[in-house]
Amino acid sequence: MSVNGSTKEKTNTNNKYDPQFLSMFNSAFNPALDALGQVSNDPYSGTLGVGLDPLQTQASGMAQANAGVGQAQLGQAGGIASGVAGYRPNQVQAGQLAGMDYSQYMNPYLDEVLGSTMGAIDRQRQMALVGNSQAAGPGAWGGSRHGVADSLTNEAALREASSAANNIYAQGFGQAQQAGQFDINALMQGQLANQSAGLQGAGLNLNAANSIAGFGQQANQMGANDASLIGQFGNVAQQTSQNAANMAYQEFLRQQGLPYQQAAAYGQLAGTVPQLVDSKSTTKTTSQPGLAQILQMGGQVAGMFMGAPGMGGGGGMGGSVPSDARLKRDVEHVLTDAKGRNWYEYRYVWQDDDEPKQRGVMAQEILSTDPQAVSVGDNGYLQVNYGALN
Image (cartoon, rainbow, N blue to C red; front, side, top):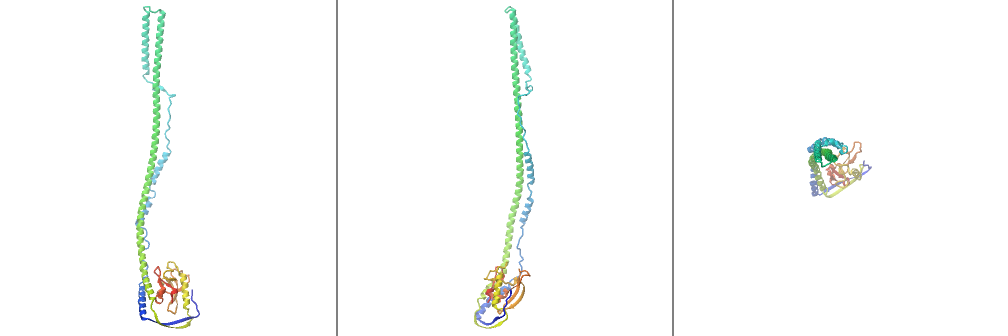
């Protein structure tokens, strides 16, 4: 950007100021220069990022160590559960009386009882036969009737013996059948008891597997909870330290900007005085650029750098742009205008080397000529309102 003009009217003005107002001006302007003399260019040496708190590091180590805790218990529980899944209970077979060998259940004294009973019947038979003989002796019966009586006695004895034998064998068979049925029932109860015991054992194993898996999960969860709790304390400690670091940095910025704020306040005060009591001027044409062109150029510069990143463009006085000498590099003097203001070409510190240079004034110098055009941005750097240059 350049300012071109073939002619320019240059006005030399001789002004007389009221001494009282001039004294007031100096009393405001000189402290402004003194305030600017207190500006420090030292970089911030404090800590901006505090890093991880030791508790956060400890929590991270605990979380890593807790990875895999409980896996052994889960594996053991899985093995037990797999065994339970393959369990098959004993099959219960119902016994039957049909086809059972009852001889093993027959009373071993049955033959003795039968023999004793048969002996008693036979003795009764023989006694009856003797009675028949005695009756036939005195002639009570005829010969043929004696034979009939013996035959009837033998028949009765045989029937009694047969009936007794049947009863004895029936009782023995019944007892044997009951004993066999008892064994069948006992065997059935034993099989059912074994089946129930097997099922209960499988259930106990499954409960044990669940308990072991639960222990593993609880151990893992407890470790995770401990790591999380310590991590939370670490987060609070880190945030507290970070807040302290941020406050220290903000205080540094405030101290850095304080001289500029004081200078701006004195500069604005100086802008209200002095008052002219007499003014004379003469005009001549020169080849230097006109003031209007320079101010137009300043407006273009302001438009270009309003909102420059991180420089608070647009802040402070309306139309102000960053013009602090600390923000400029590759500075070259171009001209001095009729007000005695120096104009320079430069690049801002954030521009690349291949970007075109800008043209403007230095805010620190403008404090001496047009303090009303200088203000302090939110970032603590001086800025110039080119539209306010007289």
